[in-house]
Image 1: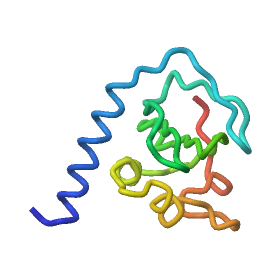
Image 2 (image 1 turned 90 degrees about the vertical axis):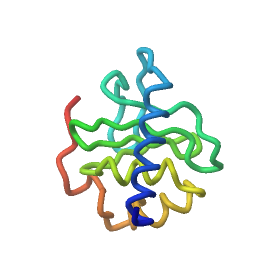
Image 3 (image 1 turned 60 degrees about the vertical axis):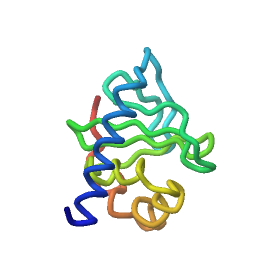
Length: 120
């Protein structure tokens, strides 16, 4: 199997394991630049062992991710499950986030600034 394909397969398996082992009770979080979001329609990790990325919640139907960095929640639009899986499988989640997801200040690939924010 090609190395990249193997990484995606491992990432997808890790994603499935994390998402199915952490049920979310009724919980809402305050997302910067958006406000309160109910996590009922998301699959969320528990606390992650990362100094920066503490929790990830993903709604596959809307390709919408919420991520808690330290104590602040942010949101990303039109982000594919493969990217979320790769984030969760990364040796350094903070480095992966900074290189592949983070807004550059003028809007990144997954920035919600120029995309419709899903109504959940």
